[in-house]
Length: 232
Length: 215
Image (cartoon, chains in turn purple, cyan):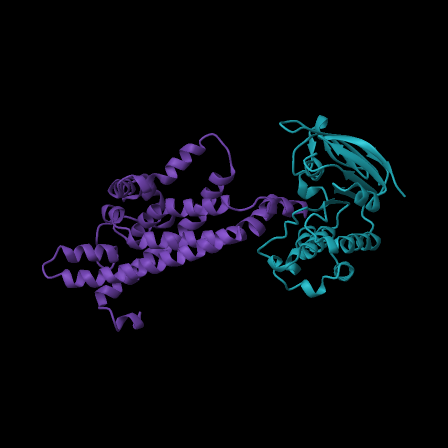
C-alpha cells in the first residue's frame, strides 16, 4: 500500500484495500462453485435444472436490498447458516468484512456462472471424444481437456466477478452496514461521503478510483473472452 | 486378429453392421454420408449402439448382457478425419497424451514412431501451424502411442493435398510395418481401401455389404 499512499489518503487506502480484499476473497471462494454449477448447467440434463438456473440468476434480478436482507436472515447472527458457521468454524458474517465478501460473492456469482457456462458450451466436444479414445476417464477429460479449453473464459469470469464484487453496494450495506475499516468498501465510502457536508470532493476522488478499477477489470475480461472464443 | 462386429444404431439415420473377419486389416468403402464415420464411432464406443462387439477375443460390448465398455476402456486408437489434435497442447504434448493416460508408452516406441512419421522437426510446434498431411501424421502417431489393440483410420487423406496423398499412405504403411496393429480403414475411395487393407466391405445407406478381399 506504500505506493498508493503517495496518492491516496489513509481512509481512501483503507477503503481500497478492504475492497480488494473483499472482492478477492469473494471471487476465490465463489469461482470453484461457479465452475461446478456452470458445468452442471452446461452439460447435465436432470429434473430441477431449470430451477437451479433460476436460483443461480436470482441475485441478478432481485433488488440487491432483498438479497442483502435475505443474507442477513440466513447468515446473520441468529440465522441458521450464520449460527452453523459460527459454531463449526468460528466464522462470523454479520457486520464483518467476511459478510461483505459473502454478499459480493453472491452478487457476482450469476455473472461468473453465465460467463463460464458460455465458455463451456463453446468448446468443441469432439476434443473430449478424442481424449476418451486415448484412454482418458471422464474426470481426466474434464481436467486435462475441458478446463484448459475453457480457461480463458473462466479467467474472464473471475475478472468480471471481481469487478462486480468491487462495485457491490446494495446487498452489502443491507447485510453488513457501512463500518469504516471493517465493511466500508469503496462504494460504501463514496456513499458515506455523499451524506456529509463538504464530502463531494472526497466522493469524486473515490469515484475516479472505482471507475479506473472497474474499467481495467472489464477490459481484461473482454480481452480474455475474445481469446477464449477464438480458441474454441 | 478376429473381428466380430454386430452393431445396430436406430434413429433418423440407422446404421447396421454385421460381419466377422480374421483379417488384420479391414477396409470400409462407401460414399460420403453412408455412415462410415458413424460406424467407426459405434466401434470406438463414442456412439452408443446396440449389439455385440468382439475384437481379438476381447468382448467390448454385449447389449444383451448389459455390457458396454466406455471409449477410454476399449484400447481402440482412433485417427479422426478431422484429426482433433488438442489446440491447447503442442505436437509433443498431443503425442504424449495417450501415453500419459494409459502409461504404456515407452521412449523407444515414441522415437520409432516419430522417426517413421518424420515428426521430429514438428514436436515443438503449435498444432494450428501444421499442414493437413502433418496433422494426419501427428494424429496417427498420437493414436498409436496410446497402445491400441485396434486402430481406426477415418479418411486419412481427406484434408491432405493431392500431391501429398501417396506420401501419406506410405507413412501409414511404414507405421503398420513398425507395429502391426489390426486396423479398420475407412475411405470413400475403393482403390485406396484396396491398397491399404486385406478385406474390404462396402457401406451404403448405413448397411454393410461384402466387398471381397485383396492381396
